[in-house]
Image (cartoon, rainbow, N blue to C red; front, side, top):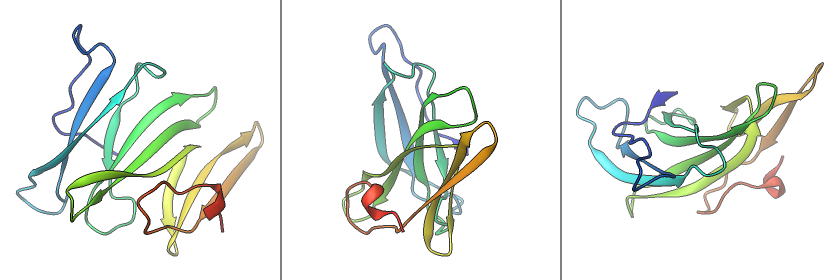
Length: 137
């Protein structure tokens, strides 16, 4: 995961708010800032944001980490860019160690117990609201 460009750290006046700028595409030499996203760090004060190309389309998605358990699983939120409006929409929320696309499906992988690994497979949606357990394949 690439770090967000222009991410700020919380300050006294913005004690719980971080903001990141999302460039238009990782493959373009002159990526420009397209939109910004801010999140509250009250529950996960050390959470960070990063840019990933989750679906391999050459454009970044914003991944914001949340709290982590004792194992490798951490909460995460994925935001995708709506090219028409220039705004980010909430695409996915889950608790995972890995998140990737495989055969057109979104796969959330994480440790289920000390000795087991678990995979959840979701059908991606074109709707502008988050993928949920109802979208599980």
